[in-house]
Length: 355
Ligand code: NAD
Image (cartoon, rainbow, N blue to C red):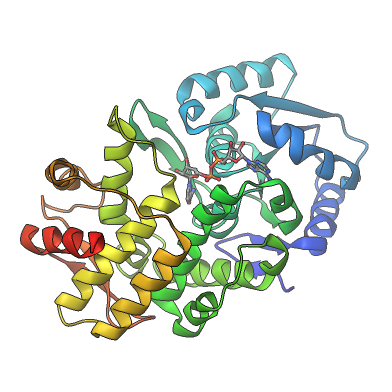
């Protein structure tokens, strides 16, 4: 598999990945290496990585408790202290081995420690492979506010080895799959079609699909690095999806949804809105709804859930000048950004989702 050239760095795949890593270690005079992991990736992924690293340098492992709840500044402070105690200097290399929580947090820790250390990301979840691997976003949450603190900074390289997915739970695989479906819907109709025949979500069949997803996200980000234009396409399904995710997270009675589960509902709702606005045909919309519902369990919305979800839309990071902006699709594979949508239409999208 050919490496993908992202903004100032390469994404390398499978066996090429470790060749590139070892070449990089040989060509750069690092003083030592720190591998940041969470409790899960320490157990499942580190044993796969350590034997393939060829270096005489000292390698230290820094672990923190897995989970979004630990993606905060307190964890960063702990890691900055450990780095200091273990003698990290400007020539140290940080390798982030984990899902989006580890690569976001580890990227931020590296970007800010002593004004910036080199870092390499090795994503180990499907979501972090297809989504967090390009774009250069690093950061942490501030209380309930996701990704509120952070910087854009690119790694030296990203290494995608799909073997890590062997131990990833199916629910997490499904969560990452939602972003891949989105890539097809907004950019590549033939890629979308490949998911219509999906019999199971088996990582062993996913190499080519993951590659294409990274390629699509990269093509979009390169065209519009600062999110002024086409990059907004990546928000398809996310305007309502994020509001639903936050509402379920804050509710005391609801079970928390994984990111991709919420985005899957968001794509059906925003697909409905696209149809109602004349951008999709009815059969295109039904194809999307049927395909997504065949992969994800139905999320149950009570009548009194919808109003608070609509209120959350007002706080969406993507709003500009107080206007809620949707990225809709204009036929499968094509996007129409900056679309305002009245509440009445959003309400009927929820009604249709339930039907
Ligand atoms: P995560 O990092 O929390 O991983 C999910 C769970 O899987 C964790 O418990 C983790 O320990 C475990 N895990 C990771 N790899 C494993 C493996 N190979 N085998 C077994 N278990 C494994 O979550 P995620 O879904 O990867 O990422 C979500 C985060 O990514 C969010 O914080 C989100 O904001 C961020 N994100 C960032 C970007 C970006 O562009 N920077 C894009 C999308 C998402």
